[in-house]
Image (cartoon, rainbow, N blue to C red; front, side, top):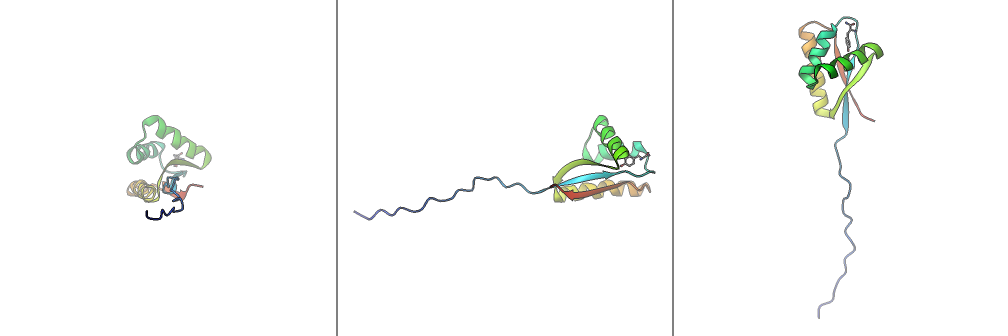
Length: 101
Ligand code: TYC
């Protein structure tokens, strides 16, 4: 009869790890037309007219507004794309990213 060896229990990984998320922020300025901000929000962040207008007005009134959260790469890609669209039209519109707390 071979000796039975009891092994210590294996600690199973129970937590599901998710990549840290980053916010895309819309920054207000005095020059970019409201309609253009709404257009960019719809094109880059796939918002409808109502959502885009609400985010634009929040940034307009408070100075900045969270647009959405993504993984770091996607957040940076979308912020750059949106900011570049504005530069092509020579508007100072700015999108920034920051890690979510
Ligand atoms: N403040 C701009 C204006 O009155 C509109 C605007 C809103 C610009 C939000 C940027 O993030 C912004 N034309």
